[in-house]
Image 1 (cartoon, rainbow, N blue to C red):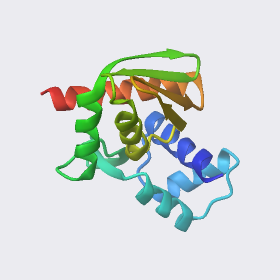
Image 2: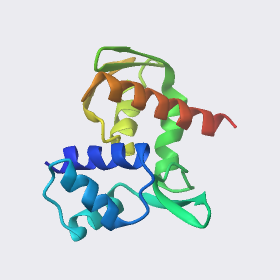
Image 3: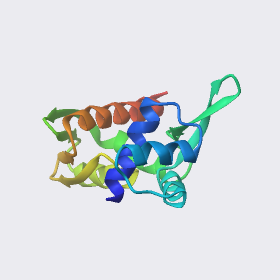
Length: 153
């Protein structure tokens, strides 16, 4: 499963210093995934991973979280404009919005492509996101807070 593999890639690069695609392939194989370097290369591109310095001239893979002036910035702005609060119930993320903004916020969440979110549904002022695990729900909430903090500065 591609989404499971990509979630595992994010977990691996978050918890380890991975400098090369070959290292990532090796880790994935050790975790039971049958992958090739070409598959991992496509996943890296799709996940928008970048290399960042870690010191001593070394670099590691990381998730590119900066939003530019492009489409992602527009989705973050919609999220910010409609967002009121969020809470969780196990692996369900509940986002409260300004009345009438839930559909736009849900569409923005979907377009921001959080790999942990399986799907979302919106009413008038509430978005419910089905998240893979409770731990992933905390991660998504942290990422949303970071996005909101970026746009507040």
